[in-house]
Length: 221
Image 1: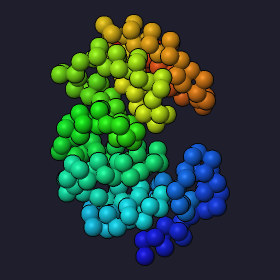
Image 2 (image 1 turned 30 degrees about the horizontal axis):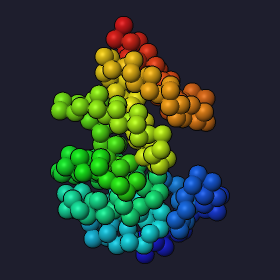
Image 3 (image 1 turned 135 degrees about the vertical axis):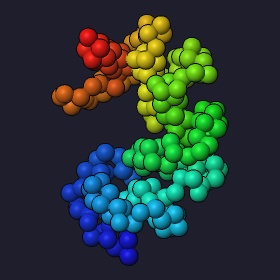
């Protein structure tokens, strides 16, 4: 029934746009806002969420993330979800709505930072980027910069994205390490030529750091 609802909300135009953005899973072409509307009356429905996830349909997995109960998942089940996915939109929602709400997210973060699976590593660096910004106590930031400098050039693209988030957050939020973060970003050059819409901030770390620091200065002036 839910799959029929999703299919009915789909459009060929959006399917084409999603494909151009790199969505390779089976999909219906449903707007993200429509998925959120469909999720709202369902509330938390863990069993349904697991069933939807197993379909491997792009929008069904997004809907599953919105109605799943993160606290009902064992840590190994979270890892299984992360590693069973290859879509960046799904990974981002999984991080925002499931992983960051899981009671064992710090243990998962530490495990995933050493994981060979690219999607687990991506999730680990995403959680690390959040900690760098919000709760950096206990993190060895210079050692993280060492890893970024050594590993980021050869990392898979999906891992590069969240490693770059960690690099930028070190530069933005830790002034003493800012010169080194800027230097690493400049020398590696990753995302230097990333297409950035007008009015948006480039993900190229030196530009990103510079813009966020400028905004901080304006806000505190």
